Image 1 (cartoon, rainbow, N blue to C red):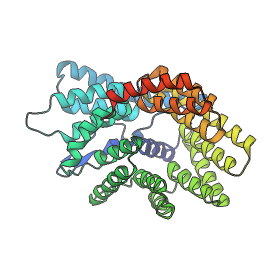
Image 2 (image 1 turned 120 degrees about the horizontal axis):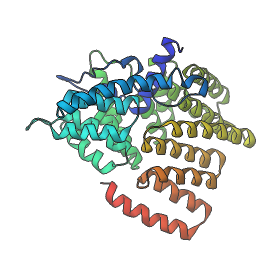
Image 3 (image 1 turned 90 degrees about the horizontal axis):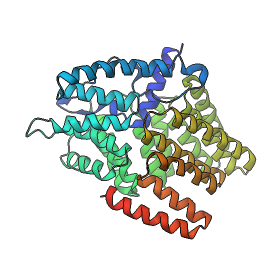
Image 4 (image 1 turned 90 degrees about the vertical axis):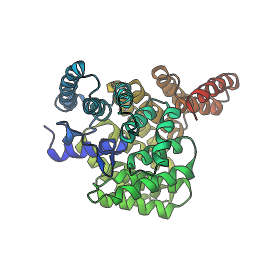
Length: 381
């Protein structure tokens, strides 16, 4: 069986990937997530076949048991907001079934008492909308929450993610700063290293590598084994030519990934090695690392219960293949697979256009641009 430490680290890793949605809070209005899987919060994904039976299956089975009980309760009391919230969180955080989570959060918003702003419910719905590609709907939820200057740190965090995807780096940076400010204002704030990682990435995009390094260091001060922080700092070292420092961070992240037994941290380690090898001119080594990363990404996608979650994983694999292996054709194949699962996602269509443009396939690219324009008119603000 996995150690308690490994289980907790998987929870922290998954919490990091999903933006800490398990802890939405507003000062004076705590949202208590009352179910028995706190120690395994946001532990989703696929493992090797050897560990899947005692980790992945058990995790999903426990969540499914809770979902069955909540579903039976909701048959009798369909408007019970606590039950809707709890089941939605199980779908979102543990099983990563974004579509089912969205249904529960939609219902929760629908049955809110008249006159109540329902910022908590809308923040949860916004996160689910974001992960199902409804960026317009997500912003419609998030803008009023953020404009009200509430203390929902996750509203600011999710809007930062969305603004980053929309290309608004300055707006994303402003929101992540606010998310961190609100988070640190909580008297009993738990460590949230991902918020520093996201700000580091935005600082990199703005050319502030010194500031980015400070944020990666801050994240690792909160959790020295935080995989995204270790690999983010490693890639910053790579871009600056500090290859020994990069290697040290990658080796540490690899050790954590082996403890976690999850496919995504393993994929991220391979991806970081690929980018380092490519930067150093080791094309064949980079290609091997990319292939290993894609294998892990595909395992994760195949194990996913959510088409949108699987599509996001394949999208990340496509980006890696394009950027680290210079393989536009392979990247296109991956994003086409993702589009079969989620055909009207702006992020996927944008990547398809980018890859087709790189390949010089003008006619097909023009057709893809038209599809993108149509979907953007529906999905973007």
